[in-house]
Amino acid sequence: MLATTAEEPRRRTGDALTMTLAAYTTLVVALSVRVLLLPGQSQDYVTFLEPWYWHIASYGGFPALADPGFSDYNVPYLYLLAALTYLPLSSLPAIKWLSILFDLALAYYTFRIVFLLRPPSRWVAFGAAAVVLFLPTVVTNSAWWGQCDGIYTAFLVGGIHHVLRRRPWWACSFFGIALAFKFQAVFIFPFLLVLVLVKRVPWRCLLAIPAAYLALDVPALGLGADPGRLLTVYARQTDTYHYLTVNAPSVYQFVSVPGDTDGVRGAGVLVAGALVCLLIALAVWSLRRGRRGVPEARPAVPGLTDTRIVLLATCSAVVVPFVLPSMHERYFYTAEVLTVIAAFRLPRQLWYVPVLVQLASFGSYLYCNSPGIAPYLSMPAHGALMLLALIAMLRTAVHELRRGYDAPSVPGQAVADRTTAEPTLT
Image 1 (cartoon, rainbow, N blue to C red):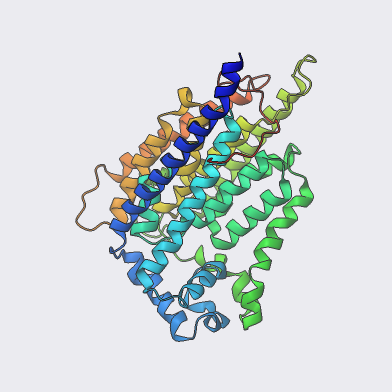
Image 2: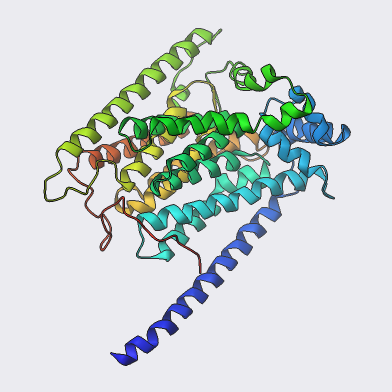
């Protein structure tokens, strides 16, 4: 017994050293892969990002944001571009390294969430973070395209982490920052509405979303930007594309409409809204019904457990872009990350879902911005793969919501919604 006690600190030190070496090795390899892609110039970079960067640079950096009409992005991302112009870097590596830094933030929050879901092992959480860091779409989005989808998704995943930690004000603040960076953050808002309706998040905490959004507009207003333009940037974005789908693996890969598509798009938005509202109502009803059905012997078990929170967030991130018209191939980015987290929580049920989502999304990437590289499937086939992933997520979520309580799916795991120590890599 004494020998075992004496060996315990040594074993923990060895585990910590091994974890640290694995973390640094993974980081070096992930960055090396991205460095190989840095010289590539995507069509998005040539058409949008590079002209924006040099416009800002030509007007002296931040003063250029007095009139942000040169870009169709909201000002928080333009702040970052303006900051880059002061660095001794050319536009291409500067823009890409900015996005790569948020890849690391995304992996960090993935680690923390999976550790909360499966606390006995930091290695499981480390594995989830590594998978996210090497997802083809995550690598491509930042290091090849120089896009900023990793930025708003990092804040969304961080917000989910705060939900799991029962920090609703922090969660809503993170969601508001994500919305300020890109409008696609709203894909997670049906999940947030469920949290509010089942009283996991108080209504008043929602005030943090517009507060964070408007606070990020203040520097641009101080520079002289037009308030009306700042507040209507997303309204102008939604009127830019009139296609039923812009290379997105969505339901509209199965819909062909000759001529004007505005009528179909309008009807599609209404149908999508009705479907999302129906799913919200069913989720809230199931959670409240499950809460009433909890036996007296388990009074501490709530209806909305950690597992269900992750499943609902993932379903929201998959369903919304799948049913809405005029979606781009990159709009499943949040779903790509959350399906990995969900699969690490319920590996037996969902191990194949991130694979389906990656096959669907990365194939769509090849269609959109990869001249000379032949996509491996047709676009309707990519839509079918995403549909299979959606069905699997909804089926698993329904199964979990019908359970009277959240019995541990991982041996030795305590019931969800408990207080867990903050994880660290070391």
